[in-house]
Image 1 (cartoon, one colour):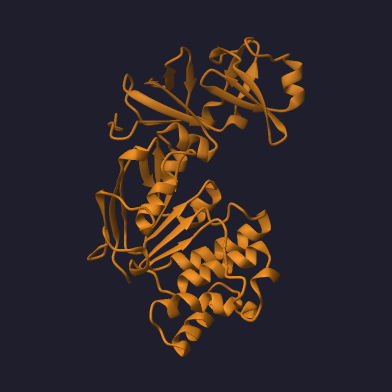
Image 2: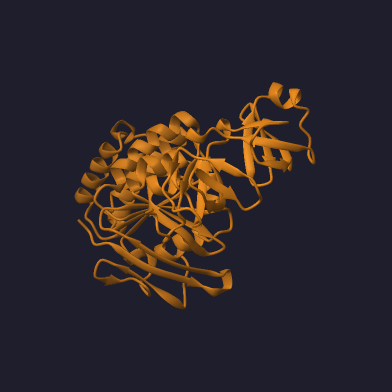
Length: 343
């Protein structure tokens, strides 16, 4: 088992300043909006981006000034980018050969890596005859064949269809075992399946980090809430729920924050119901958006996903006042990071 990663990526010209630690056999998902700095972190760890500040330490090796080919880092990107003039086996054997292994050892490593990700039968095929999912599994095998001390997965399934993603995700589960792994993803299911922890980047800074279940179930940043499909609201804890910053309140069946303390609450938008009357907080409708066969109603910080018929029956339109009702069993109230949680 290899050592863990300790990195401080500082790229002033891109306004990125990120500290990152990954345990020896841990997978960390790096998520955030476009332009948050995720690719910069990956490039710096791989040695593809030279930095004048910060550090990259892997186990007991300082890689900060080490060139990419000597780092022992495996990278699987969005596209497989296999050598078209080499067979699948030749593509996978290329890494070991380039790092000094003899032909017999390189072929053995290639065979073992292809078998590990379930594509041993493709060894003699030409890359041009592969499907997208097959090619990406070969790319994973290519990274594995070098026995990398650190594995970087940069949106490895984003270019694939749903069926291929499931196969590639299984291969990634094999690849990440026993080594520190950084996974950049926009797919919550991928994070759940592969990551032990999630680190959230916004504007080149870490804004949230924690175990996968905690970040997805009780997010503290707007992006993490959006990533997990939840609506996040802020306010002050009450004995029965949360008083919202914009006025009104939500009752909660799950609340552990002392009354009067700052609090967060989450619920799933499909649990919310817009009404013209009722007891829910009142807000003007901000936007109406089509979403997966439903209509997403945004009313200030509150969100509800409803059918088209419900939206039509209520004659919802931007600027119109609406009340958002959420059953208390669907609302979870909790403390912001670092705040007391006991009564």
